[in-house]
Image (tube, rainbow, N blue to C red; front, side, top):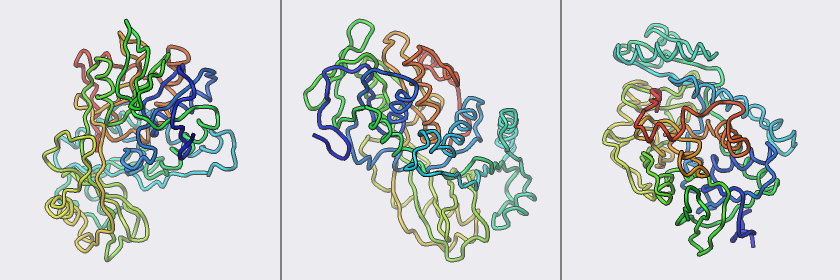
Length: 404
């Protein structure tokens, strides 16, 4: 039987690869396996076929090169190329749309010399990797974006090349569709246990009562990644953190596109079009939450988000909230970076966890890298070994300093 393209039970008793989580990371990995010549059986297990609360679905759907580490920059550069050549990547299939990035850019704002120095250091890393980041004085920001209040600022950082909004839902849809068309099985079920025998995961236990044998397991379970890892006796520092989002209509629209402005308060906003904008942020107290906790904080808009927006952009003193929702980051509390690659002892258990809000844009490169590891036992394109679990075991942070 099938439901929304999902099977209600696995076709086989064992698979060469079982991917836990069928959102964009799991589906990217599944699709890349089919593209790189993998001939074994692949099963994707997804607990919610609607993806209603998946980070993939609730994302701001933006891409940037303004990271503090070269590897993250390279990952997003590949992501930008992939998005803008999606049809070619998918074999020239006429059903696949041609996508572009809406390059309004990201504008980081620094109101003290400490963060200004961080932006300067990051810009050097970005420039060395070929990114088009520009540092702007307050006067230059006022000239380029006259609607901004800049009197309290020291520096801004802006890149408008391959940086802005992209249609992440379409990329996800085609990863999944093309994977299924190439023979990947998708099943609606939930992983409730892993059978670890010696130094390997031998089977995946499902809520339905079935156990599926496996050659390799990929943990692409999003905010439930730590829960899945614990089934194998592995601890990872990943937890769900709530992030709040609003779509607003301005009474007086800005006279030019709004970059994704990251205010020093942590509040951010970006262009949507037609006088509408998206805004986001989180409470000052930012604890881990339950995986199913998506209630809005009704006071946050009035107490923090709107005041910060209206202070930075006075035109936003008169806005109407059109819609609002809460999402979750799979937040890596150690260093806000991904955890990838194999576990050093349980070698057939692979991580795709802890993306801390930048998973959607990284999914093309991360899926490719995971597929390469499964096929070759190593990387053929971008070397992701800096993100491997070993740094977690050692408590050795590889901090990404440009998290939003």
